[in-house]
Amino acid sequence: MEEPNRHLADTLRALRRDRNWSLDRAAAETGVSKAMLGQIERGESSPTVATLWKIASGFHTSLSTFLEPAPEAHAGPLVRRAEALRLRPAGEGMLVAPLFPFESRFGFEVFELTLLPGYERRSEPHEAGVTEHVLVVRGAMEVLVEGEWVALKASEAVRFAADRPHGYRNPGTEPVVFHNLIHYPRRWG
Image 1 (spheres, helix red, strand yellow):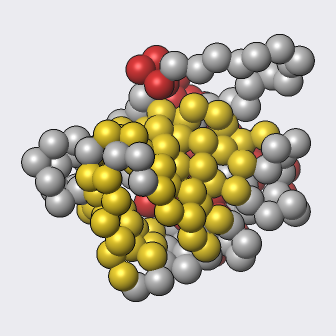
Image 2: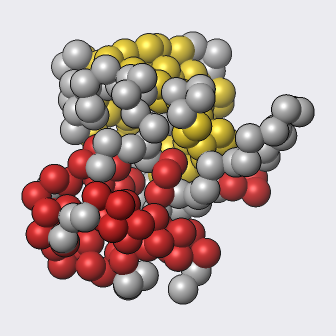
């Protein structure tokens, strides 16, 4: 089993165990089928980002919890390089680099996301109180906020309540790169 799949499988299994949830209960809480959850736990499936979000929301945890372990707390600077962290979740036109995985002491996670040309992703609402900050680094994209597609280009940003339907798309012919800071309510962690 590849390392990202192993981490995902181990994390899902540990969260279920910690909560004393059966696969049936986990399926009910996340909206992801029992069969899919079982496949993920056995390392037989690489879920899409949309599926990972559903699982994370159902367990009231961050998306990055499933992508890699949180860095160990230390006093000095923490340097992370996107090129060493990029993942390509199954069947998606999006590359994900968890620059700073969620740590409860900070209350947020930061991703570098790359949308390939023509890619569109609509996201279901996250938990109440979750806020996203999208900052475009390279290219041009559109973000679905409050039912409207907002056009953004390099050096432009938008912040919005992510507990409502939202989305991201690249209508262009070149990849777009943006940073996404996701802030979670204090009760998370």
